[in-house]
Length: 123
Image: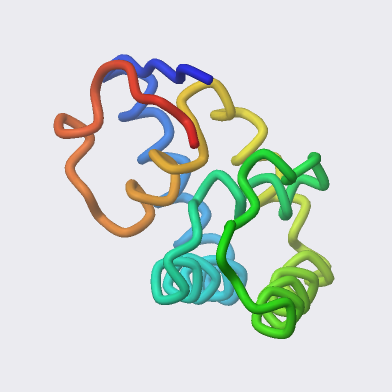
């Protein structure tokens, strides 16, 4: 799958992420924890986004991963989704699905939007 992004889309996404960070800091921190866990386990951010939005993650499921580790990871994502304000995070991810969950996560990590402009392959 190919995801494209313009600087305007990325800047809008960055503003919404900042708004989430300010308005709902606990939810934002849980999202950041999920992002960091995803990076530590070397899973893809697309997999994370699919799990949060209850989409079919099978195309993005990590190949060589212990089933126990994968189940613990999924439990952590379920805890994030159980937050009573998780709807706001789901709405944010859904709104910027066309640029890819990876770019949304990278923006949350503080990556400069100018670096993320253009097409990318979603794996």
